[in-house]
Image (cartoon, rainbow, N blue to C red):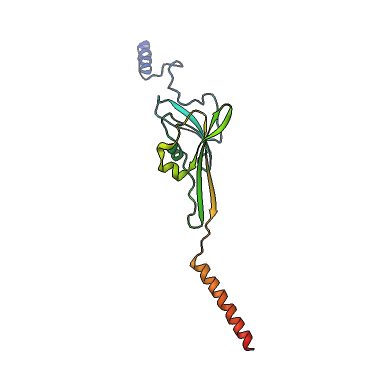
Length: 171
């Protein structure tokens, strides 16, 4: 009776795929034995789909992204979080995207464009390759606008000076 129970348990475990060290789940990603701390390793690919590893650096979600080989630059930009929104009332932000690729032992810029231009022309971006580096750079400039409040302050100051000069003349 004990042997029959053991056999039954072994059969159930075998059907569940829990036979032992030979039966393993499919490993996804190429990090393998490495332990990464502090830098995100993000996988955006269907199981079994060929992938490329792209490094993302800059104002977006910096990290190592393993994406499907058919993933375009706009989608990777979106996966990385684009950029942190700026206060559009006081700051003008220009976001530039650059892709560096190893060519002849040297990393060279293979693509550079403002983010809005890149998003509006998704077919104009190069296909991602293994080892590419995408740099997302945001440059912020304070808006140089002349508001009605500033105009009113200048007008009030000028009127005060005119009134002061007029009163000094009467003395």
